[in-house]
Amino acid sequence: MWGIAGSHHPQWLDCRLRLLTLHDQPGLERAEPDTMRYRLYHLPARLAAHARRRHLRIERTWLWAQAFVLAWQRLTQLPAPT
Image (cartoon, rainbow, N blue to C red; front, side):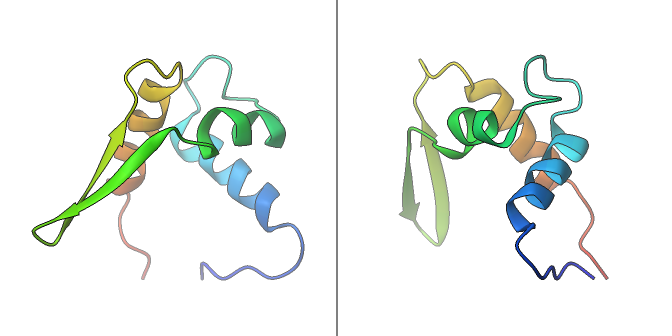
């Protein structure tokens, strides 16, 4: 079950994201919640919709672009919960 209750939702999300996707990324594998928010959650990008698809355009000069793309790819490859 993926549902969560209580006030620990942000910590749970950070912990699972690091465990599943960022375990081999230097500087992010043990990052604090504030660091995660600064480096990954405040994303300098544009979300564009075209032909029923969404495209995320990330700034190439952003220092954490590769880590975000790798995390996104790993998350999308996870099996759907049953």
